[in-house]
Length: 509
Ligand code: SF4
Picture 1 (cartoon, helix red, strand yellow):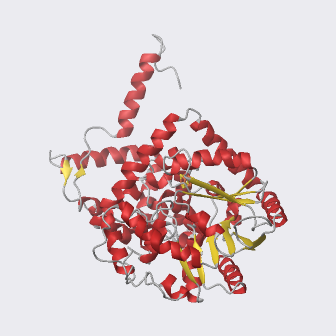
Picture 2 (cartoon, protein in one colour; picture 1 turned 135 degrees about the vertical axis):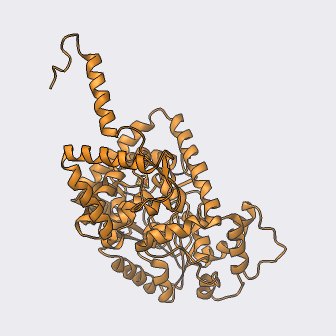
Picture 3 (cartoon, helix red, strand yellow; picture 1 turned 90 degrees about the vertical axis):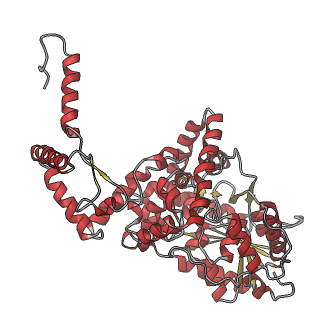
């Protein structure tokens, strides 16, 4: 970063990089995005990190803690209890926070939240803002909004800083730049940091880190306002909690004149004891650590006698569609603690990465949450971006039934005629037979026989009408032998025969 540039320009200037080509910024283009992602060699190389590292690390720490499964049950119960009494716990949080000298603002919509934050910044005459990582800030498009209003916001989490340089969205909720290779990041730094000497070695991750730190240090010291998200809000004490591995959240919260916490309403938990239980499953599920490096509780502004801390402390509580989820079938999604384990274990995410999902929340949690927040008509492909292997639910620390909820979204998509006509007709055709068991058995037996004959002993098809989407990329196996149903019946008959005492075979209904 050029020294001596004005604060606003300096913070906004990292940029100087043409808007990077993300696969798309639209949730409606999942298929096109996914196709582009599959052909992106850099992305495919970068994504191996997720599959190889996150899964093994989580398994290792989970295996080391005998009570891990019991902790997951407790975490689910804490979140369920809080959601059942959310209004009461939000009021309790507000009361405690206000007693500590902070201000609580409720924002019904994303626009409300943006305006509240702008208002606070304007009253303080703020020109430069530092930000700790916050998915809710991404959700409401805060950086662009502040920028359009003459306030430069700089991300201070390393991954977020990198994607801000590239004008991209995070591709993962805990590892925002996981889609990038080291060489790509070095290229971004060389383009954006105009005073970076050419001979400076940036090949090691530590040297990239040192370079980012030297730029961000200036930003921390110059910021008027610090904005962080919150992993949790504690009703008992009025505290907001951030969990990081870099310590950037602490500097963002304590150095500027004002600290704004931006959090969605479901982040509240009743007590510090509950917080401790949730923290034990969060880091293990997210990064495979027993605890994150920094877990910081902030409770209001600086008090008399404190050596540091902000003079003003504001908490903006965002609803943005969440209270509407409370009474419905997607309520369990509000248990989410944003650990990222579901995407770390998702074969679709491994193949296409986070940008293919087109918005802030990728992977299985995004496939459920995004339609709830922006509408299924805007995100109809996302619930279909799943093989229903069930791994997301298996690893979710708060046991959210993600596949079940994706299925519910698919049903709504079908009911509203949002799916393509060919898919709807195909399903209707199948349903006609599926509702008539005998006819279904007969039709599948005849079809299997005809297909076996048509394959002429090769056992596979290179081309198959109505299945060209499949045969364009791979052969289609021809049915071999009896259908599943007839094999199942034969096996069940054999099992009954073995279990029945002599002379009673076939006597059961
Ligand atoms: S849905 Fe579960 S696994 Fe996925 S991010 Fe949320 S808490 Fe983690």
